[in-house]
Figure 1 (cartoon, rainbow, N blue to C red):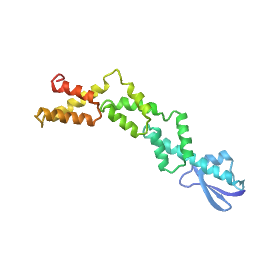
Figure 2: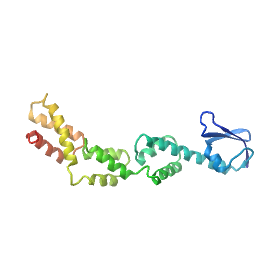
Figure 3: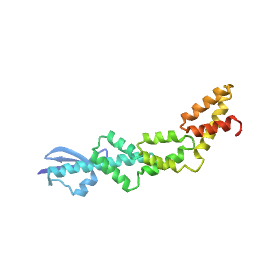
Figure 4: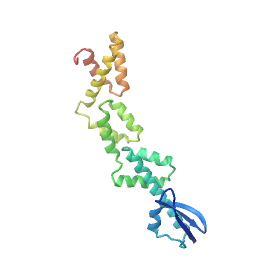
Length: 212
């Protein structure tokens, strides 16, 4: 057992305190932990208790870090985990933080994927959308579920047609060769992640003048 000789409020952050044991600084922690554990000057505590204080403080800081990240925009679990890993929180603390976020519906990869697909299909094809979601750490099955919801509508085709029209208008100003025009337009649309079948359908309609 050791004796707490002082608990001092942090001058720069009033939500945190410094704990001194046997006259020496031991650790800084969130003030709420002191109230929760009913810590006070001259109180004797075990080494295990002090270790738990440090762990609990890490959990609070990790949760605050994650919440600040989410304030700037919706994130995937992978993105939150990356942020916490960079801050060097333990695996245990990271998993506890993610559980807290899931319990309060603050992270949901399925909802994220659905929203992402709905938004991005307006200007990108399914291949690019899928790749972007994979980069964000979304599971392949979840991505496919979100993309499957597009079946039966012309969202990708409409998006590709709109992008194709705009690009074609620009290309016509400097390209007169029909073959080169078609090739450049195909390359552009493929680069935006549209499927081959969708691109060919759009090119057929645009270059035949069907959609003039």
